[in-house]
Length: 353
Ligand SMILES: [Zn+2]
Image (cartoon, rainbow, N blue to C red):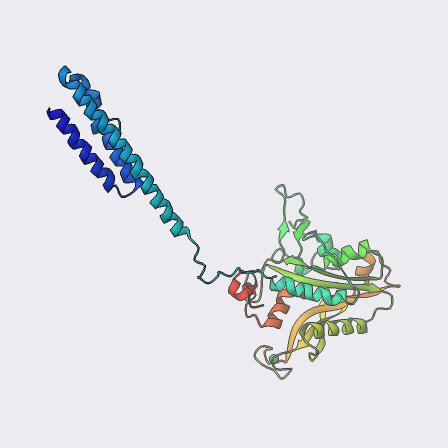
């Protein structure tokens, strides 16, 4: 009865393998080797026809008993291994409540937005309202209505991003498009004068664009805040008082201002405003390049031409306008050495403010 002994030996070997299987994957290999399509026990069941008739009953009984025993052992081992693997997975995923917590990083408002809001708040307190204008603007609002004629240097292709359609239809004889990314927020002044009746007291913060290569003191996109006042009896004294108040609110009560004559196409007279250096208090230091003063904005009395172009009677009304770069104010207020740091999104830098 060699076959029956072979089956018994196979049964013992398989049961031993079942007990030794270290995980469910190894156990499955044992199952396939014994009971799979070409498994060893399956082979005996298939070749039953070749067993001599008188032995067939005994062999069949031995093979079937072996199959039942192996199946039972597999099921028992499988249940044990699955329970152990589940326990291990739970252990691995367990939360160690004794570990220190992971802090959530709370975002903050960007320095530029904060300063723009701070300046807007100062003017809201003076009774101004906030005006907005389009960032894609026409030449008229960006230049002409602001008294910058066609040959004005600021209109050159070198300074302005023009928006050109494929046919070039929007271009004038100089090849300039009539549509551009605004180079200044001053166009909002024109919209405000067209849309509102005096008295006008508006502040207009917004992004502007120029064809500059980014370096420590230039950016191709930056933020300006424009202010405009049109009312009866507005004088240069009102302009000086307003901007002196702004500087003291923004930089501190002890800071002084000075006005230097300058030229802008849309204001007459025009001035640049300096604030006394906060590091040396006017003595002169490296930060203020030895002058004791820091340039912060441009301003002037609105040119009567600009008023009449926007339909305001310059005989009855006068006004002043001013504009400042928010990035520059950020640099002056917080001693930022390179404008590009404001755009790089480095949290180590931004979190300081
Ligand atoms: Zn200084």
